Amino acid sequence: MDFHAALGLGLPIGIGIAAIGSGIGLGGIGNGAMQAIGRQPEATAKIQLNMIIIAALAEALTIYAFVTMFLLQARIG
Amino acid sequence: MGLEFLARVRRTTLWTGAVAALTVATYGAPLLALAFLLGAVWSLANLRLIELLVVALTGPERGGSRALRRCAVALGGMIALFAAGALLLSRLSPVWLMAGFSWPFGVIVLKAASSLVLETAFWKRLVASRWRAAAAVAVLVAGAWWAATAWSGAGTPGAGGAPHATHLLASAQSPAAPETQAGEAARHGEEEQGPQKFPNVIGLLARAFPDAPWARFLHQFEVVIYSMFIAILLCVVAFIASRRPQMIPGPLQNVVETLVEGLHDFVVGILGPRHGPRYVPFLGTLFIYILAMNLFGLIPFMDSPTSSLNVTVSLALVVFLFSQYIGFRELGFVGYFDHMMGSPRTFIGWILVPLMLPIHLMGELAKPISLSCRLFGNIFGEDMLLVAFATLGVTTLSFAHLPFGLPLQLPFMFLALLTSTLQALVFTVLSTIYFLLMLPHDEHAHEGEAQHAH
Image (spheres, rainbow over the protein chains, first blue to last red):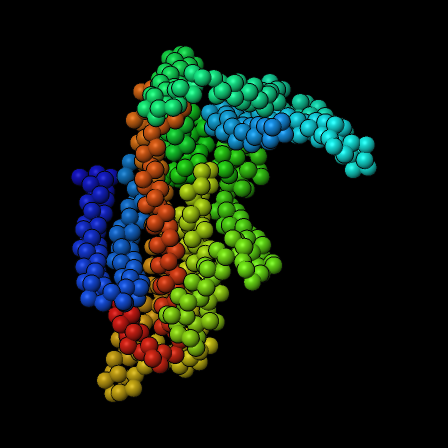
């Protein structure tokens, strides 16, 4: 398998794996935040803020994969 | 009735003329569109001056000194206008200038005709029932579709089957695109590597004048120009909103006050009442600026500067340098390195210093990288998504040879609104937390440790 074919196969798979990982992470964050809001509805604003921050941190990993994909995409063909 | 009708004609002419000029600019030559637009504007100005003259001559206060002055203004304006018209005719394409010139008259005729139709009993009966009206609209749309298909099919007699919209998008988006534009594509291929975005004003200008040095300059500094423009826009809005503060605020002042107050509460809520207020201006400006830059890309023919890595890196660098400065100022030179070593107080703490110091230093360096890449990736990805779906929408309709496509990107524009706001918020929140970590944390010690852990 030459370099281009490997890149063409690997990039989508790589971004998919990254998306699976941060999807699991986001699910966990959402689960925790929703439970916390359910237990303490009066702390909703604070919980939501922290949830957004951590969700952004988890989401960033996929974004890194995405940026890498775009950087390497030009070399495929 | 008369003057109000003229005002309506002016409005309709302006927006239909703008749409027509944009269409001409995208499918034809931009210079022709410029000629068309200038012709329409010239004609509108002419109409306006005539209206002024007629009102001054026949209005209720004719013969007065004000009416005389108005007459003089109108006549002088007409002379200047005709001089400008002669200049335009010598410089630009006369055919398109004439087309633009007759555009307002076309609007007047159509408006008058439609007002005649609207009065008839047939029309009233037609729109009395909702279903009949909908059916009429559907028939009109189908007729327009058929006419446009026939027209564009006749307009391109077997030109390799390259239809307008697909052709345009392809040539605008992929540098290695179609054979018919091989020369242009090759020229674009040198300067624009990587995936293509929606065409924007500066890009179109650069395409219209490929050899002019100023167009190349604009194209090169496109991102800088857009971000400067947004900064100036925000300055102007802030200036207007705070020029005459009133006890009972007007709409603009109300909006700005709500925004500023919300940001103040938000930052102070995180940084605490002692340190918070000092950093509100910086962080609040950051939020508003990034938000404006993110949303700017959703305006047609504009581009969001944050979809370029250069802008986000510079924003993140500013935050990074500022947080280091805060660290040195608030903690002192010794305190800063103490903080970097993880504040060793016990024996075990001192043993761990060789481990903690590199971790903290790398953590500091990773902050600007993650900040900039996150913002860039999100906004760039959002733009790419919109482009991909717009292309898909055009491709779906390409069999009909129409100059437009299905607006498939519309649902994703709402998503883009959401991510734009969210990413501006995330950037601001993370900057605030980086500041918080640098401040002497007396009551925030545990939070600080928890944040270091990631």
